[in-house]
Length: 271
Image (cartoon, rainbow, N blue to C red):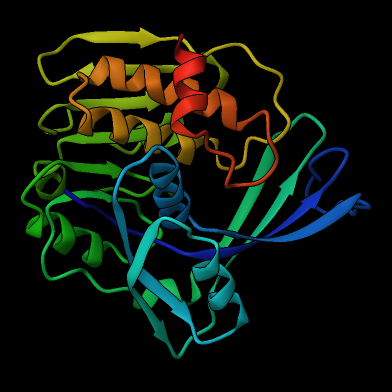
């Protein structure tokens, strides 16, 4: 069965800097690169690398950036990505010598994304309009995973249709005290791993492997891809989160947003 990812496609303009600039400060960058990105595309690529059949639904501009985005998605069905009369989405990313980053996203064509007519298993994020997210979730008939990024307050009616919600600590702060998700909430904690708050009220800490970070861009997308792949393979939420932590740790050891591991690399990391 094919998993549908409804989400963004962006071009990432990545600048390496010695340290992230403070307000009003000008720094000299050490390098710049123009790469395919976007949370939807990154997560779809991460899933494909793990052997999952995945179809991406979204929108790009009828421009060179759109062509770059589509050409980067080997193994992903992109027939559901529309070419529209708007510039392809753009992300401006600064990465410092410690691997930390700041990101500003200009949605562009992503604002014109549409929900698919038929959805089985679904993974969706928040770099496309909320009404597209809501309609996609309403139409889904299988597993529904929502990566609630970037941070935004979400209606309870949407959360009640979600099986697994994935957030970071900042995004978690905007959630209700007890989000009414069906299986649980996974809160990522960066290098510290993640916490699984299951629907039965249990809380489980999952530690991440200790690695030397080169670039944290895309680590969250690698985490989500591996978590969803494990859920589709029948693992419970805690074990799926362990897969996610291992994938995220591998991702930060490599530059760029498309740094997710293959199935063999993840299996080796998991031992």
